[in-house]
Length: 530
Image 1 (cartoon, helix red, strand yellow):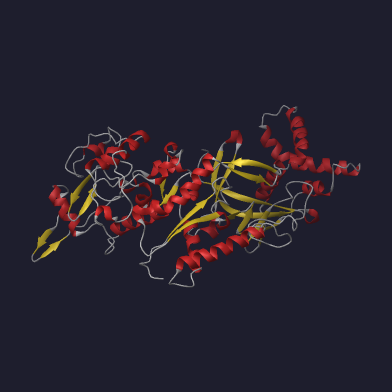
Image 2: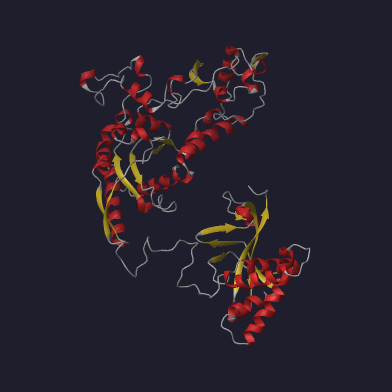
């Protein structure tokens, strides 16, 4: 398909689902497919009208929904939480133009900008530094000392007051305006229209209405920073025009172009990273919440699936719409199929099927940890094995009464050594003798698995490079070190609910009598409790 063909899908997803489900394909709704070949831009509201009308109906009138678990019906109300978009799409959705001297929708009419060679430059980011910060007095930025406080974000009442000055115009190049480009009045600032989303009764109450997509931001900012630092041709912002602008502004004389014979030379620059381009993103991150619910990665993959539906390139919208409806019908029907593996009843690859799992009577042997990778036999030294066995005993709820009884015994001895240290050394042997004596009396509490636990583990154990626990995959640091995505970090809750952070070093499987085993993760601490 030609890259010049622009087609805009509008996708909704339900955010009241679990985080691992709300961005999956079956839960994404292709509500609109705005046809090409050109982008709708300021006329976006024409296509959004049916969607907004349904959103208003879902909020005002509600809909009756059946709860299949309780077998009851209730009235459901739905609302649009926010839009996730890149910067150009934000202009079309919000009505605030992302071009010109007032391009920043957050700074609004206080956007710090100035005209330089062939472009508009946005300066004055030192305003967001603390008032007494030393960089405010540095004149190398723009030749001035920065004394202004940072600009306050406009309240919803101020925004609505500005929108009252925006004249209502018919969309498109209507005959009433001579089919010509319309100029904005100065009182309209950068507003091109009053967005259709303001018709939603709750829209003015939202703190974050249009969220800038993290995927596009990290790519653009990273490309600009790395391109400038590494001086990549056509990607660096340190151009000859930028050096001429420095000379015109009268700052950073050491970076001005100079003439060497018949050639103009550009002095080498030493750069440091600066957050100027992303000054408003931390606020959006705080208001928007977890990043995996606000970036476009799952939606870009979904768009890739939609592109595969195109068989007739002369009518791509029809191909996508027809294939999507068929897929929706199959997805709906699969919810009512029994005895057949479908998208909804199929386990994720890191989960363990309960039917394949051998149920054990005690918790430490009834593990849901699935090993990943090649097994390697390992012989643990005595100290590490005893420490691992004590950890297993401590986390076995079925023998908690034995641990309490032993603690009472050593507490009455009157020894000065801390009780925890004494118990970690003496309890395994005491517990083994205790179970053997109970076993002789044929007591039911000393079953085969309790006997296996009291007898201790084998000197030889198994080691794995990874494991899956409750649907989450963990890898050891050695296997993780050459990967782009890191899954070796772990967090453990310690005494007094303190959180200890570390990196997985090894994953061991301890073997006990009667084919019983338990798996545990070896963590290397990287910092103090936070």
